[in-house]
Amino acid sequence: MQTLELDLGNRSYPIHIGRGLLSQPELILPHIHGASCVTVSNETVAPLYLSQLEQNIAALKHSAVVLPDGEAFKNLETINLIYTHLLEQHVDRKTTLLALGGGVVGDMCGFAAASYQRGVNFIQIPTTLLSMVDSSVGGKTGVNHALGKNMIGAFYQPQCVLIDTDVLSTLDDRELSAGLAEVIKYGLIRDVEFLHWLDDQMDNLLARDPDVMAEAIFRSCQHKAEVVAADEFEADQRALLNLGHTFGHAIESAMGYGNWLHGEAVAAGMVMAAEHSLLMGWLDTDEVEFIRRLLIKARLPVAPPESMSSDDFMRYMSVDKKVLDGTLRLILMKGLGESVITADFDPAALQRVLARDL
Image (cartoon, rainbow, N blue to C red; front, side, top):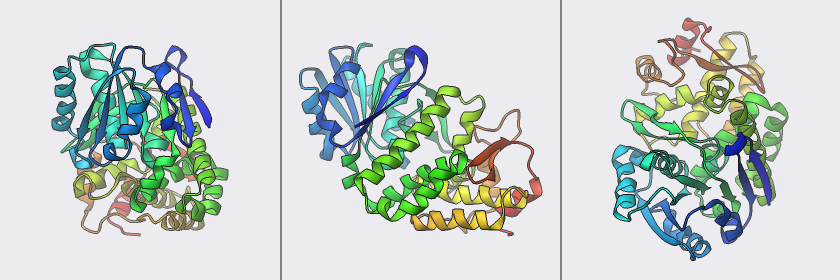
C-alpha cells in the first residue's frame, strides 16, 4: 500500500492506494467518528462490493442506499433519494456517509454529505479508474443540470480516500479507457516525463498490470493532491486540471449525459485544446500528433461528434464554470507538460476548432 496526504491543514486527509484495501477495516474505521454510517452505492457496484465493505463496519449501525447507475441519473431528483433515506433512518450529524462507486456516486454522496443537516462526514471509496485518479480527490461534489454539467454543487472534502485497485478487475474496458483520459491529462498539464512513461506503458495499463496501474494511480493522485493543496477552491491554478473539460462538458451536455462517457468527452476536448494551441503557435504539429496517437492507443476518441455545430459548443461553453464576468477562459497548452488558463486567445482560432476547419 502507498499513502499520500492531501495537505489542507486541520482538514488534511490520507489517500490510501493498494490491493485488497476493502478488506482492511483499520483503514476505514478511524475516520468514522460516530456510531453509525450509511453507504451510498449504485445498482452495478453494490452487488459486487457492498457486502465486503459491510463486513468492515459490522460493529456500527449501518444502512445503504442504492442508486440507479449512470451519468443520466446525476441530478437533483436522484440525490433526493439519498436525503429521503437519511431522513427515514433518522440520520444525525454524527453519521458518516461512504461513497462506494464511481464518479457519479462520489459526487452525489459528497454533495449530500455537504448539504444534509449542513454537513456530515463522508469517505470516498472509488471503484472506477476515473474516480480513483480524479473525482474522489479534492472535494468537488455536485450534480448536473440539463443546461450544464456539474453546475450545482459544493467544495467539501472527505475524511479519507480508499483506493482498492483490485476492484478494477470488474471494470469494463470502455470505462477503463475513460479513466486513462484523466491520467493522460496530468502528463499534459504538468509532467512531460509522466506523459512519456504512459506512452511506454499503455499496453500494460490496458492489460491491467497491477503494478503499472498502481503507479499510474499514485502519480495521478500525487499531482491532484499538490494542485488542490495549493488552490482548494479553484481561484487560480486548480482550473488547469480542467484541460479538455470545457469542450468535453459541452459534448456530454449536448449528446445527453451518459452517451459519451466523461473521459471520452475529455479526450476529444484535449485534442481540441491541442488544436487550438497549434493555431495559436504554442504547440507544433508533431506534439499535436503525439497527443492524438497516445489517446488512440488508449482507445479513446480524438474528435468531437460530427453532429455538434459551433453554435452547439458555444451554447454550452457559455455556462462553463470558468466563465468570469461573461468572459470565457480556456485551458490551452504551451508545450507538452505545460498548460495555461487564459482569456487571451484568438476567437477566430476557436471558431476554426469548433467548426472542424483545420
